[in-house]
Length: 295
Image 1: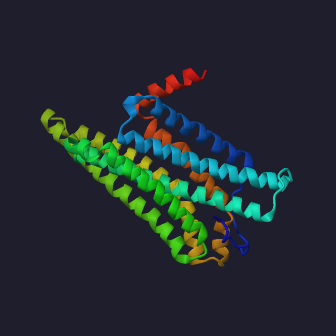
Image 2: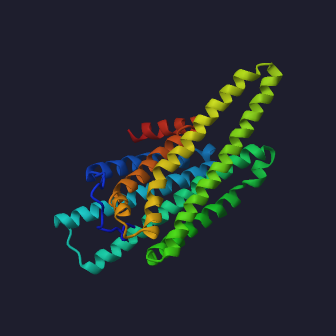
Image 3: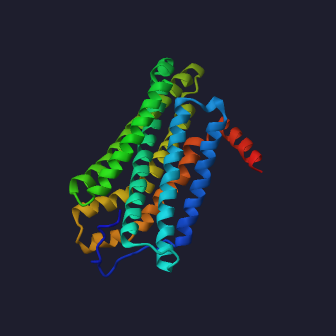
């Protein structure tokens, strides 16, 4: 993914070094967290619903993001240390497989974040029809389409990464997911505050309720979109600069920090379960049972 880096850097380049141990540790934490989410959802039949299936698929995607990055790092370390001997052709094929896995898991992770936002939107604005709109067969088809599209898009990206259109397409996809999530969550916040004001008028406590709704909703929205931007935007900025200024010294400074950007993506895989899974009381209860059984 970082094949288009340049060595032309300015004199004031700031390169943030990510120790290999830290990179591997982040991947391990993400692996444990997301495996626990998948295990809890698989164990509890009460969680066998479209919403939790989307959360489960997000956990699988995040798990693959972490595992693929960690595996690539581990293989590189073994090759550098001479502990792993392989022919150049084999190494190239392995690198292609890892890159397809990394890219595919990133695309699927973004897709499932969008799917969760759509699911929550439908549950709020079409509450009475939710179970007839978001059915298990439809959710299954959506999940299958996302996985198939992720594999196809990642294969095309790795095969034609040197084409500007491919890079721009991937960046445009990120921007589209960001816009979708922002619009849906802002609309949901507005509806929640409107509902809060309606209840406040009934109880004649309009001002405090409105203020509480606004602060709590704004905080939640800031966390959702802020984490998404902080973790994903630097990596896609990197891809954008590969297209816009591949030889510029200033852009070269950005390219040198690609490992930091990948570490932020792994951090997103750690935070996602905290935002989308562990906030569920039912899932936390099941998680406790899973941990007790493991001991």
